[in-house]
Image (cartoon, rainbow, N blue to C red; front, side, top):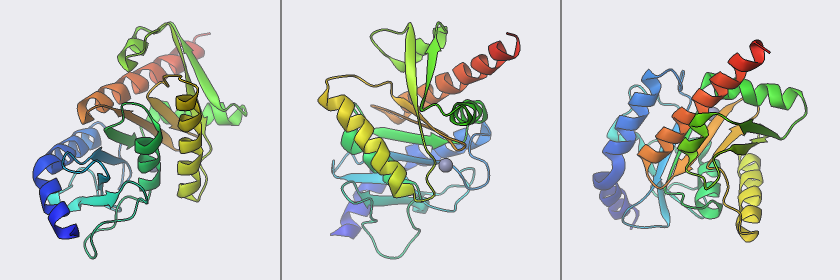
Length: 219
Ligand SMILES: [Zn+2]
């Protein structure tokens, strides 16, 4: 019964999502009502708890956390707030990416700028080398990473389909992907085994992108 899932899920992880949303808003990475966060339910692995659409992340409340079906990205309850318009990107990652238990999407400005510049050059990824912060992604080889840049289709489920195809192919090949991605002219999405791990990776990605732009400016 959907109401039961909702109540159980809220008690477990809702406060974490609300607190993290407010913290990321204060960093200036979720302007207006942008940005969205989710976690896989601790009670049911087929359920994802995601922030509501159209809410300021600086003023989020417990009732703004919406349980959705991981398989369909559809809300599990009728009435109440709608899930984020970008929920299909989250559910695509839970279905296809490795060690994905929490997802954060933000309009962090340096990451967004790097994604825009790559897209304008017609590139579908950004190669990053040398920066110490790469270690924050938890990869076996932190000497360099290639971060994909996905097109910002107006039809968000199409972005989700691109994301799922990309990470499913990597998984099938046995490759461990870098747990961050960029969306052209839009923002960054990161994931990890916990909400805190995803937040740390977002901080590292934004810091790296700031350094990329600073070093490019100075040749
Ligand atoms: Zn967005």
